[in-house]
Image (cartoon, rainbow, N blue to C red; front, side, top):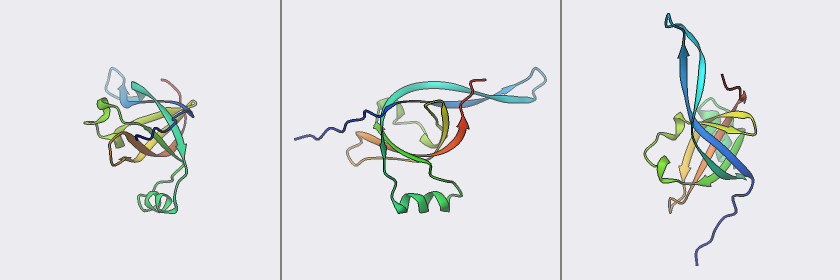
Length: 116
């Protein structure tokens, strides 16, 4: 019998960031390019998760579980930006479960999301 997980904590928006430049080529900011929305469940982080983040000179602020959509299978997840409740997160690490039904995102908070 297949066990289904309730991903009912809300929804995340995921996408990439693109550098915006002036007409003269000077960097003037970043633009969020949305790629999709996923339901999520907040997970408890283990001590090993915090140690991994520390080794990478990052801080683990949130660990979430989402479905693993086919659209994300050939994308480098560490390049994604996650928006959750108007807060922007950087992906520290992303692991699939053994059956490749779910993704576990390890996130570091960047700050308040401002669409620019």
